[in-house]
Every structure is written in structure tokens, then in C-alpha cells.
Image (tube, rainbow, N blue to C red; front, side, top):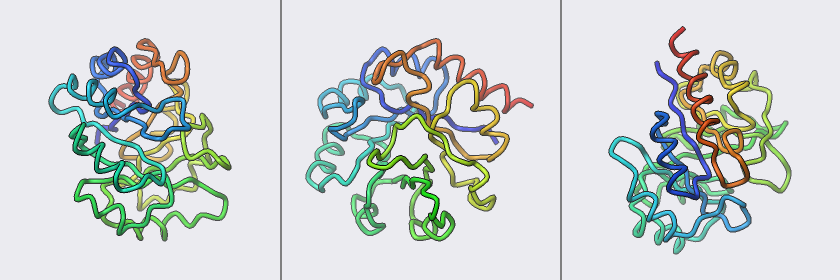
Length: 208
């Protein structure tokens, strides 16, 4: 099955369109003020309005309150929600939108057990654990820790770029990969050539 690709941390229309042109499946928008990739609701809405059919938009939150999430949903018509904080399953399900739950790969994390708690999630995103940073760290983790039985639900994140994504896909058989810093010229500013190179590597491993 073809590996799906999400480019996260989109802040500019030209970056969104470059990613679409390269063949990505989804674009991610960060609604978390401390992040250098944070976008306003208005900014995201303008970009999302330019996204063509069959490319999904995803809103990333970190322990956001209900009012903010409701506002993003109503103003942007976002397709998917992505929760990177301590949100419990009941909270994630309450917005009646498909959602992804991110898990940070701490050394003591029981991936299989925690993933089963979020059985209603469309996917489980696995990211590197760096204390105090809920995502976008640029760090990877030991892919061997991913339970084989979860591969069809996994979105693999953390330190991916054109140099390692093919190995990541081969080792994990993840349903999708999520890249941000690995395709950037600077934080929040994507590099169209890096996106194309990343997609070329994904397509190459998928064709073998």
C-alpha cells in the first residue's frame, strides 16, 4: 500500500501549493502559540481555501481549550484534528471530527496499551520525546519500538527528511509519514526542492 505523506507546519500559501504540486496527501497547520510554525485562524483559513480537492487539512493542537478548537473548526472547515497534548479520548471524540492522537515516545511508554485507549482515532502519530517540546523537535526515535500490529494505524514523525525517510518506511511499514523541519529552509518556511526530494524518496521506496 502506498505510504501517505503529510507536510506539517504550513504557514504560507506558496508552501502549501508547492507541497500539493509535489503530491502530498495532507497539510498540517499548527495552532500552538509557542511554536515557530504557529498560524492564526485567519491565516490558516486563507491557505486552506486554496487547497484543491482530495488534499486533507489537519489542525494541530496542544492542550487547547474547547473554545479555540471550535473556532478553528468553524472558521477553517478543517478536515482532521491532531492532538499533541494530554487530551483524553473523550475530549478528542467530543468535536465529532476525525482525529489523530500523537504519542511522544518516552522510554517508559507502552505504545500498544496507550494506542488502544485511543481506539477511535483515525491514526496514532508517533513522535520523538524531547522534554518540554510537544512536537517539531527534529529528533527521531528508535523505530524498532513500534509494534508491528500497529503499523496500519501509524503516522511516523520525528526527524524525517529525504535522507532517512526511505529507511523509515522500510523498517516500520507505517501507514503515513509526517515531515516538517526536514523540508524547511527556516522554521515555518518550507523549501519546495526539499519537499520534492522527500516525495521522490517516498515514491521510490513505494515502487520497489
